Length: 238
Image (tube, rainbow, N blue to C red; front, side, top):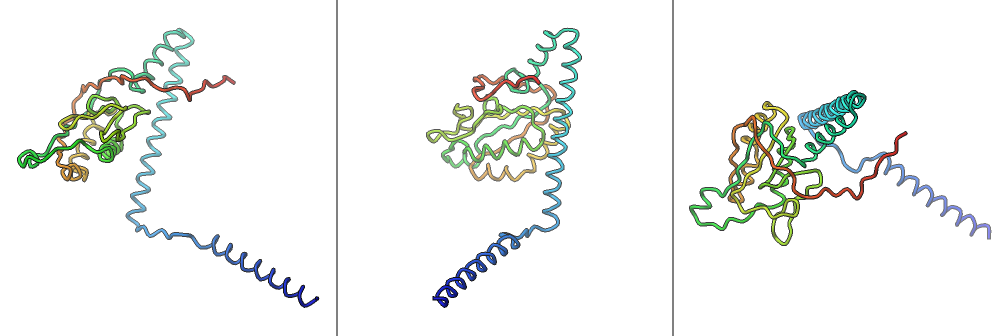
């Protein structure tokens, strides 16, 4: 009887020790090793630094707007409210916007036209990649084939057709308009797109990108849909 109890006790201790060893190795040994070289780490650090700088700029801009609203509200609360609402509508893309920017024309490649190839519409993945490239250079306002990009915009495939804001994007040619904060930002975006690998991606799909030189007064139409606010809630004043 004592021998049987001792055997069970030994087995239990063995299982406990085995589980403790496995747990120790799991904690102390990472699943994957970081195999990036110094240059890749520096690039990642540069991207994070740029993101941090953009966030600081946005915070400073919001602080300035708040200070301006508080100062104006003492003299004319209604006027301050109207000005603030107008600025927010512009940032949300609900009104026509004019500013420094560039226009990108997407059209069938000359080779595809000469060979009589069937030109298909742009794929959602390729269009999303292009928008991401554009947003890397402080793009404030974008419209694709006359469809204004807002925070709730979705670029997706619907029944085999690429759509923006649930509206079909035309088969090339069509244009994309981008407004930046300054002419300098527009020039940076212009130079980046001319040297970007995404030009090759479009060429593989029998399309080309033609980037216009920056313009000081590019016009982008307003968003013509309804903004869904059903998940928004008013904050209570403390």
